[in-house]
Length: 135
Image (cartoon, rainbow, N blue to C red):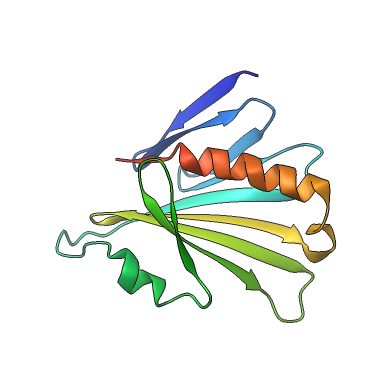
């Protein structure tokens, strides 16, 4: 399968060509499959203060039931958020380096969480996240 690559001012990553890609103002990047059940969105934040340095352990305290996951080039905070009165869940990954943060979110219907399609999408999303390189 063909691999595509994108590069922004903040990060670069790779993804399989069977995923579609769209972006808004180079800040919100969305990945999805035409026959998929959810969408991965990636946004970034750069602090103007170079004194503000990402501390994964301090940042983790902001997210209930979060864990720290190891990836190829970084660690990420990972958590699942169940929205009250909603039919969706949101999976989050927060990645940081120096004064930059990358926020990855995957939203999907609760009805789809136990499906094979969900597990396949999560596996592909983990592969995409694993390729992220923060500039």
